[in-house]
Image (cartoon, chains in turn brown, yellow):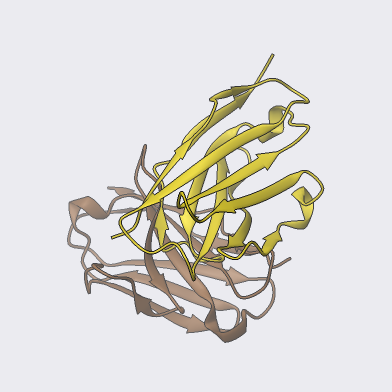
Length: 108
Length: 115
């Protein structure tokens, strides 16, 4: 199965700053089938990005995704107070579909 | 806007079968894929498998011998059964729309395996 590694484990930033989150795969992800989710405490994850770079419906344009092959990035251009949460990447190109361990973005 | 809601027992005894149902509202059910995903502190998010509205399935190999998913299109429901549970199966279980990618999620239900 494809193993996803996310870095850093925790990112401490202030509102208005730029956040850059990394997701690396143990093997190439077919057709850029890479998604990003946001999860807040006590809530289900929410789909942000799919196809590596396509924003899901209703997602603000401060969220952007990039990358291909084995290296992917989620960028939040200017952190809003509501963006402090845990972010997971997931590959859905090769079964079994797997998630990364997550990056926590917290307030500095 | 599709909404999903999990239902089922919150406590299951070891060696017994965990059974959950997901009810879909507010959107189409047919021609779509429906998944189960779980989240535990020790293992993070784990995709369990999906079922197509027609009944075809795809399960994660590590659970394949214990998992059964089914669908009832007339009720817009799909279900998960996980047999021979142990404490390691304690988790929040989510139902979701999508084959692997989860476009929409239920709120999740905590299932604890304990005697």
